[in-house]
Image 1 (tube, rainbow, N blue to C red):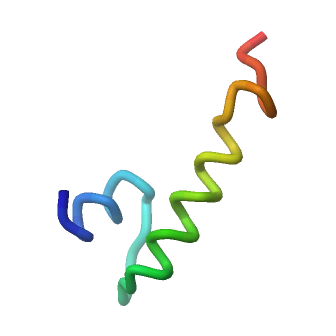
Image 2 (cartoon, one colour):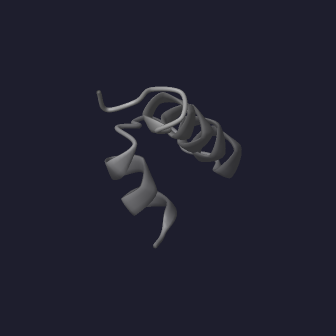
Length: 40
């Protein structure tokens, strides 16, 4: 997977840096983690 594939999945646009992608990935992990946000 390259950085542009990751950006598309994470809905990022504009100038991309590995740090920006990493931060968006971690935010998505927190948002969708089953222990934090159970699927009910």
